[in-house]
Length: 90
Image (cartoon, rainbow, N blue to C red):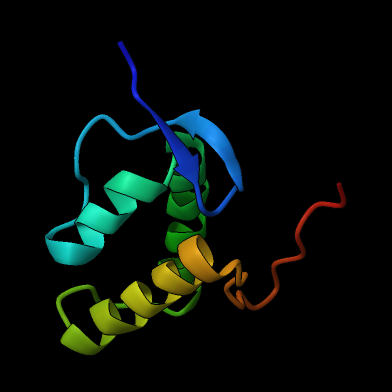
């Protein structure tokens, strides 16, 4: 039985994550307020950010940058700036 959350990113009730995917308080906030659909969208953006910015995830500054982008995307509705990426027209 899947659980439902009110997704802050999508602003609707949607299927919630199966378990906490990110550590700490931020991970709990994501688990309680972000849907599987929104998390999957973020993972695509995250991959683009890592590749386009050539981030080394072993560096704390790269992880901090990515975490800030994730919070802005999931909870503030801000699209990350990815050089050369043009979002599809809806």
